[in-house]
Image (cartoon, rainbow, N blue to C red; front, side, top):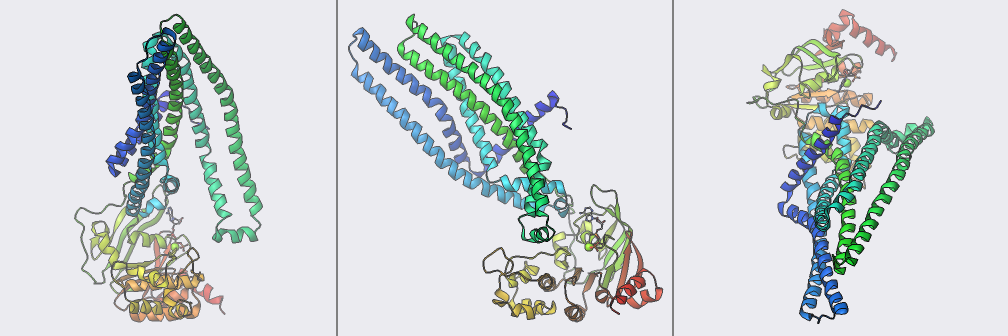
Length: 608
Ligand SMILES: Nc1ncnc2c1ncn2[C@@H]1O[C@H](COP(=O)(O)OP(=O)(O)OP(=O)(O)O)[C@@H](O)[C@H]1O
Ligand SMILES: [Mg+2]
């Protein structure tokens, strides 16, 4: 259903367009004032010069007519001066156009660089919850595709709009000077035309907006048909036809909507064109009769004909440019929405630091948490104490909340009740930068950096210089060393298929690289979310033997569905329905014979 358009809403749209335009002008003004002023001036001048030129030509014609028909002796000085002036105005116009071209080129190479930098700065400082929010993802998508050209378009339309406005005003004054009633006549056609144009642009925006969900679907579907990681299933499950049909129906709907509007506009535009042509011809006839009555000169006839055609083209330009401003401002608004987004997780005024390099005590005290915009409590009065140096494991069904515990531990989200304490300090009072140096996390959905092996592992400690020995040691602990040695370029091998010379790894090999990255960090608290999901059994047991030896003074939190990984932990916590339902060592929990024992036996049975 289309929301009802009330007059206030229309006014709000105009206000919003103006606000966005103003903000953008202020922003680009900061990039380079001189280029801004230069571009603006170069845009306005072409509106003024043609009138001067028409006027000079009028003077020349009058001079010629006087000589030819009235036998007045020719004033060569005046003629040459006028011709000279005409040459100068043409020259100035040419210089203006070329200067405008140059300035815009310079200006609009600079602005996207500035804007991209600003947007990247902003997004890296926004919290994860923005990125897990589909509305914000939409915004990013919209802006990513348009930041390089939408701002330029909007500003150009504004400048061109100003140019048209100046053109219209000058012509208006000149015509009013001839006869004020003519202005009324012209306005009687221009005003309805203006309303017609606004209506048309509103309707086409309506189509655009109504189709927004379909467009999203379109891009999503075309992605399915084009990406290496989706096309495999699409081929085997023979989904291409189904998706293509969907794409086709979306595009057809879009075409029909537009065709309907185009046909409607066709008739109206034809009527308005005929009207303005009639006015133009009427004006011409009026001017000719004025000349016949000797109220104006032959030069004036030429001058006013030029003025009126300039008035019409100025008016047309004004409509077009305003539509352009409006359309682009809708995109630029998304850009400002991003630039004005405020981080939701805020650092304390005077954040505290931890004692460096000592393994801290980690406590969840009575934590209750639900994701933003969701009522479902993922954790309910959840308490957990992890002593320095302890190796613990979290187990539980899919969706039990294990990964959520980790996201809270690194304060991607703030808890609603209770608190998380590190060495007795509430996480909310802790300096996050400092806390992040104390934790190494291997996320369930770890990154596969399309960089060299060394870089991939070295990213674990980007804040300090990493030497080759360290990288190799981390790779060895993660069981990645033998496989890296087999790569053509060894540790210098480029990974991934995006860049030339890169090789792709198997999922398990990627996981080993990611694990090496986490190990390299050598942080006092190491968190591994499903670290061995894709790693073979032999490598897994070797990795954990090494983890034991390497990290005897470190806290290790492991999340896993594989009991072979879990059973060696000092303490195992079973999470169910947002709460810890069982805890203890493997043998403790087997003795209790509860959920853990049941699941363990189930998995063991599979191997018998
Ligand atoms: N960003 C999010 N926004 C809203 N709900 C979320 C978000 N991430 C996870 N959830 C929900 O929170 C619950 C717990 O998810 P979580 O990822 O913590 O489970 P998990 O125990 O790690 O499961 P798995 O074993 O499958 O990895 C799930 O019901 C999930 O739907
Ligand atoms: Mg998980």
